[in-house]
Length: 369
Image (cartoon, rainbow, N blue to C red; front, side, top):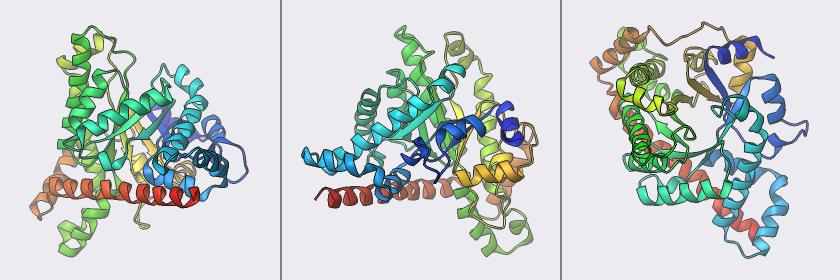
């Protein structure tokens, strides 16, 4: 087992894989199986998204028989996709059952996302989340809900109903504060009904690399020394400030009331941690975001880079809040508004998930015919 990956895990940051396919669930010699990644690389969870499912189902022959059988029953394309994805996620949940139990239900988690076209529709999000939770029926499942304004009341409702949630597409500390607030309100709703809190878990997926991908070109266009000195620093600083808020809530009187009732804190999850700029250290969005009670979900390429060259620094977040605030303030001083960036990235993020979802529907429709 990689010492670096083991050190990250021991420091309190859970390593999840941002990928799922049927190839991953068997030993086929083409890609590392989930079993081997769990046993050898400290992987204790999996995240998925519409792009991952689109790639998996469209490019793998392992889905052909099921696709044909479901089409023969007269199922429309979207129902076929639901059947295939729910089946894959249920099997992955079963693969992670031992991790789930040994971690006290903290890890061993597998995520599935509601239809990205529902990102601006609160009631549709709630309805489909309930349906997915019931269909898959695994205690280590997480339902992914977008952190849009419309998604916030959905998060509160689902948590209040005992449905564990992975809140996704978070780009700013302001929105993260709202997400964590919605989660806490959901637990408080359960507490008022004298319902158990200990069986509800949640993570908040804070996207990393896309922040630098958006801001760096603006800094280069400015061309000032102050701007160029900030290249590659925006995303990590943004995440560090989010973690500062997490620590504030974790130690707040409000949270302590819920903790005494068995509540599990919503953990920050660092997503989109594959480096997009080849000039940057391919491990920076992992090694600079190690801290207790975090999750880092990464593609296998990033996992391998961390294993091969990651430099473990211990807790890389706590105590760096002044530096992080300085970076965000400097960005503002040269005209880069982190909230404007976040709004842009949120809209683009939704579109980036809708496009592969529509392509998958079209591909399944064509295959069904």
